[in-house]
Every structure is written in structure tokens, then in C-alpha cells.
Length: 180
Length: 105
Image 1 (cartoon, chains in turn blue, cyan):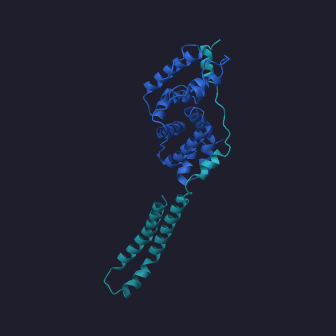
Image 2: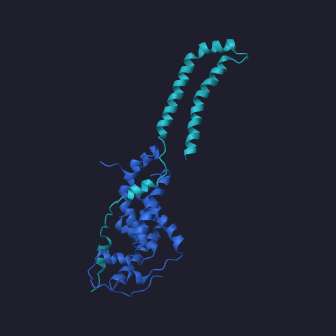
Image 3: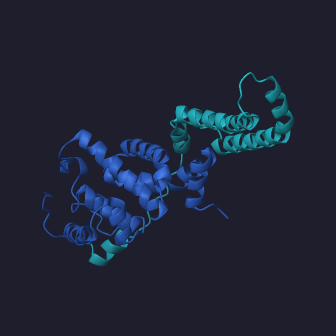
């Protein structure tokens, strides 16, 4: 039986157990890298750099983890803030480049597939991308997402509703409006 | 020819790919600061040594007090000297550990 995240965290805090830390990284690296890829609009290299930074911050801040929230909630909070800090350093206002990413509705194959939806998700603002990823890909509840992103519960719910409306509009043949 | 809302929902819920580690974990570990020494083990060693030292001091204190009392040029009661010795045995290693750990942070 594998150790729980909390048990591994305790080992790292008590004895600076690098083996336990490595287990935590191996266990969560894929989810964190996928999450950051989503936020970074599929820029794998940037996502990997930010994921490394996330785990370094996790190590440095492990003594502040109280265990009241799920470990992954705490971890994704670090990842999200790491991305936002990086984003501030790049552009004050990131604009979506339609030419670089292509049109969502001009694909020739119209069967619903994850690729089309992934491309549509890239058009959402960063916060909604985070909310969608945590909800649909990580299976987190609204409350857990609110805790992870440090946002009000109402904001999470409205982000999901509005994001859904946009996605359905783009993917089911509605108007192709530009995201503000 | 467009997608139905249900198919959008299904696609959203499609599991994401599992990314191979590909040395990612090794790269993270390589960026960590040098490993701390085993703090807990060191604390227990110091505490045990201090306890043993105190026990030895208390065991051999009465004959030592007699000797110290006979050769001491001051009129300090031998029991004060013994108490000071016990406190030093406990305090010195504790201070040593405290300052060492603070320097390592």
C-alpha cells in the first residue's frame, strides 16, 4: 500500500526525506504539468519550467501545509500563483492570437473530440481555463477549486457557467466572437 | 455538422494524458538546496548525552563536592558548584544545536 500524501509530507518535514519528496513529485508531476500546459496554452516548455518552480516552492513551503485542505488543493494553488507571477512578468494583458491558434469552428472533422475542445478552452481567459481544468480534468469540487484559486465560490460557479456558454457557442456553431 | 452540447460535455470530461516523468523529478531534486542533516536524530543524541551527563554528575557529585569544598579558595557552597555544572552540561549542547540549526537555515 502506498503512503498517503500527508504521510509523505510529514516525512519530508521531519527528516528532510528526499525519497518521500521524490514520491510526491512523481505522483503529481503529470497533473501539475497538464494544468500548467492548459494555463500556458499548450506551451510545454514553459509549463515544465513552471512545474519545476511549483515543486521547488512546494518543498520550501511544506512546513506551512496544515493538512486542513487536500494536498492537491494546496499544490494547485502554488501552481496557479506561480503561473500568474510568471504571466505578470511577461505581459500585463495577454491577448489571444487567433492566427497562431487557428479557428475553432473551421475544422473539417466535426465529431466531438477532446482536441477541438482543448483548442476552444485555449480561448478562455486564464482564470476560466484554470477553473475548467481543475473541475473537469482533476475532478475537484467547486469548493476545492475556490480554495485552490483563492476565489469566492460564486466566482467559480459563474466562471463554469459562462465558460460553458462560450464553449457551446464556439463548438456548436454559434457566433465566433472575440474574447474580451 | 457541429457538435452537440452533450458531446462537448463528454469531451470536457475526457481524461487527460498521463505525462511520462522523463527525468522531470530528477531535475526538480537537483534544484533543491543541500539536504539538512538529520535534525531529529541529532536532537535525541544531544538530549541523551545531556541526560547521561547529568546522571553521572549527580552520582559523583557528593565526593566531588567534598574535594571541591576542601580546595576552593572561595566560600561558595559545593552544592552551588554542582548545580552550575549540571546546568552547563544541559545548556551547552542545547545552545550548540540551536545555533547550528539556525546557521543551516
